[in-house]
Image (cartoon, rainbow, N blue to C red; front, side):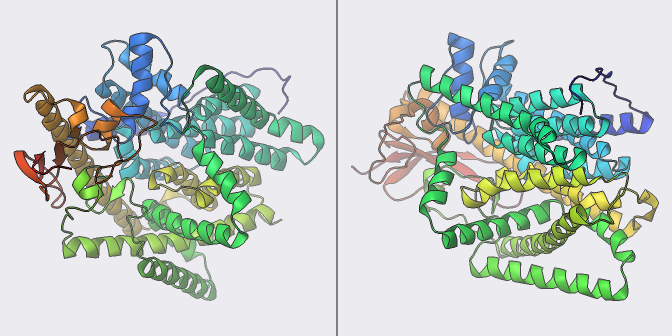
Length: 570
């Protein structure tokens, strides 16, 4: 890259096939949104904390940063405020702001796949895998940071890879700017800038000049982060939760022994690989048979033995340690989507009965994820071998591209492996792993793909999509009814929020206090008095006041919301 070069024109060429695919992706996304009905002025998960920042900008013109927030969040707050400008603040507007970024995210994913020379059909298949991913679609119906970060991060990768391939300074500048936007949502965007430096060195040679050019964007990202943190410190009094995950990682590295760190990293890596192996399994089904045909008989036997052995070890370990999918139990739950932040289920007063068929289903899902994990491990080793192999000189699959993708994956995952891991943190890795798996196949014609494998893959995507739509609908539905019950309690019965335990989001929105200390026999979520409780079922010490039936699409999960009134003192 010559920073003083003539600035080239930015061109985007869409032929008929590309235009049809892009249009189909957009229509499919809108169709999914209409089916699940995202309308409703209520927060989900951490929306209440992030929403307060947007509400403050819209109604008071001030930047408010809740002490519950641990992410940078700045870009997302401004994006959400933009959608609230026409009609005022509402969680519905915030939800549509994220759904818009969800569409940008999958369109950027398609563009990224095409940029690395995947065929239109394979790129479309990979994009659909992201679109119907249960974590991605549900989080698109919230104001959580996951999808906004994903959208800007993937878009930045598209520009950075284009810029490196074409030696285009302007596209690299645009990519770095978009990474900084993602950085001001989540600190983990630094992984992209660091990986860019590694890829730049591989592409242009290892010398001091290229080192400076390659890692200058990372220095810029660090400067942006430093200035933002200083600004928060100077202008905001309460931000005690900000950066806690980063601090926890440094504490683990400095205080825990190497054995503890290796054990935790290994455990969380295994769980993550099973999730990711499950999520991209349809893609593996399409590509693996093509590669398998080119193996010798001995290579086939070795490959099958490796996958069978590794998947057996992984699944066996998960069964013994009781860590079957869904684990860690954050967004994906045994009944669809969670977390179920109501008092009775969170504290296990009322255990929702898990049907035997559902237990078998999750065992099957874990086995599929284990097989996918074993295949992913094989491809990770293969990618590393390609980088250092002198024989890997394909014009379409440059080493720098493999280095860029692999470095981004490893740098991004390292803090997750030793810190706090939620399933939703993994969605950014899905398109990266798809590219890593697909790079050896970019010269392979679509016609070589086994028709049976394609049917199996599309059927799997269809099953994923059906589960995602049903679980998202049910999650939005029971939360909508929960907030209807709470609003009725406050408006019809004139009960103030400080007398209600309405769940994590309700009490966070109305009663959050950074100095709150959990009280005995009460939920941790800022409950003042628990005279009234909204839950999925009645429990000891409370009588049912009102019941709201739930309409669900999935055959399992909660079937009602109840309002309870306290009958005992304490």
